[in-house]
Length: 217
Ligand code: GAR
Image: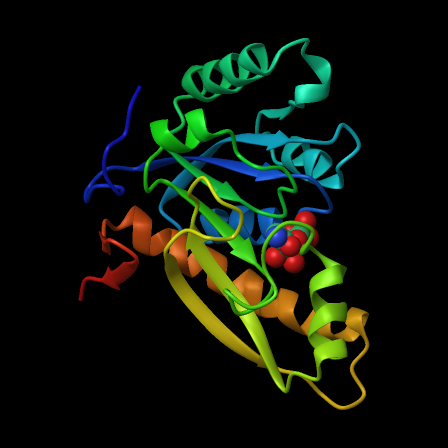
């Protein structure tokens, strides 16, 4: 198993969704598949936390759901081997990170080159990087005084929040926003954008040229 390229045209996507929390983005992806808007099969949901509500969402929809954390292994190598073996066993050929709060091991990034996406609740490269996740991002955006924030879907490389940007969408910051109200407005956009972007991959329309990602007509 070694993928060198972006997802090819004409194949059905075998998706794994990596989660750590509530899994509302996972739900949006499940709904898009069920509604015929995303031509993919969700083969696996992998959580870094045993208590993630996302695991329950997966089970409710009959999707194989596993908890896999480096904490449960006595070496990093064993953890990575277990992750790759789990992906292979479920015939995964594309990974969508959806609120996954761990770094994907470089060995996995290399094996799934240009086939791992992440969704980030801000306009990268602003408000990204280590420690910038979830509500912290929205708090930082408000504290900075930004008038606009948004959503970024990007390819995952070895650095946090760094891979080539595939799509971005803006969200206004309102004068009376709290981190919670802003998070809710941003999440609504995430739920639209992520399935749309995954469908572009599933259709083989995503072209990666260095840092620039283009969408075929
Ligand atoms: C989402 O807002 C996602 O963009 C963010 O975590 C939330 C997960 O929500 N991800 C990051 O901050 C990654 N740096 P969900 O579990 O309800 O999909």
